Length: 229
Image (cartoon, rainbow, N blue to C red; front, side, top):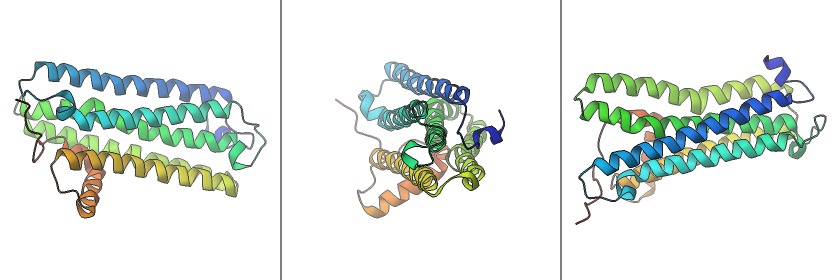
């Protein structure tokens, strides 16, 4: 399917909507696989800590990713009820389709984080393969940027000339809010698990680190939670 079909005034065809629904379901499966994998790791550990203490960052990743996947599904279902010729932002089939695509890119980023964090960490520390783990983390960082910034902004740039003013406001505000939600949520839990002081400056630093989150998969927390006696 060409981009010209998605940019058509009548909005994307229903087949495109259905394809995105299938992709959203796959993202949800990946997210919950990441949770199951972490639970298996925790069952074999001897730290004495609860799952919430050990994998709180992963729980937040799964929740954020699942919420974004559900947003994508809701927007795609809304597309099927919108009138294709309506250019008002609230009834724009094209507008909600773009929001759904943006949410899907961000949810895929969370799915990647949930599925690969412990794997990259394990490769470095279990097999003492720091070089290989670094290469994997760098590669994941490129994909992270692609999903958070490059792909959504490229899609918005391609769609932008074809959108009405209300549609432009809808897609740009939605992307900004969802991106902020991802970075703030992940940054906050990283701040908590790292034992950093609860200040605005520390939060800003933690959010900034989320721009290169895959590089943080290599190391343990600076101040891990205290083991349960």
